[in-house]
Image (cartoon, rainbow, N blue to C red; front, side):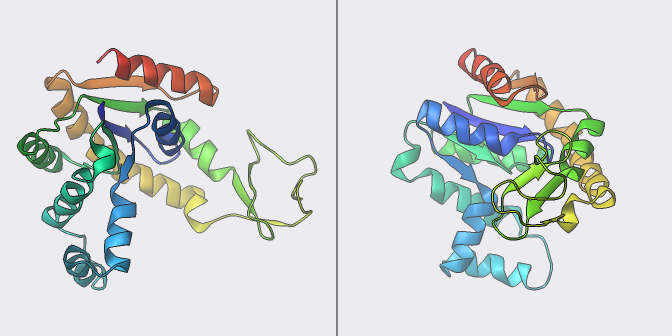
Length: 215
């Protein structure tokens, strides 16, 4: 199984990727993680990426594709993979397809986890983190027993800057602007499987499995 997983911030995409990894015994290929590792390890591609990042510029697609290519050549990807965080637009999707076809590991399916904008904002803006132990809560869906106090250690909470509503709306605007071309690109190729990402995690996971196993 060779899968691309799409979903907005707060859609639960990361949670579902981890569950898919365990269920199908295939690795998650996170472009963010492999980029950070390449930079930390000072690999040639990592050094190239660092030069752009230090200037506050986007890392070119050619470098990201090179990192993905190197990661997919590793032995643990022989049985399949889950790509998370890439592609982000139609041009990247086309370049990724070309690269994957060249190495004989084309995508089997693309799953898009769909959650309404209002629900996404509620999920992320409600997130709170304990200052002392790092336990994560959500004031709407997973509140502590006592308001404002961590169940585990009694610590106080804080809200990350990127979980504040104005920031969330900007992040969603960026994602939605990119998403349309990706949905059209993969839809035309008959690869796209859209599932609703609302409801309990195990129910969403069942829907994801049904989608990819039927691909």
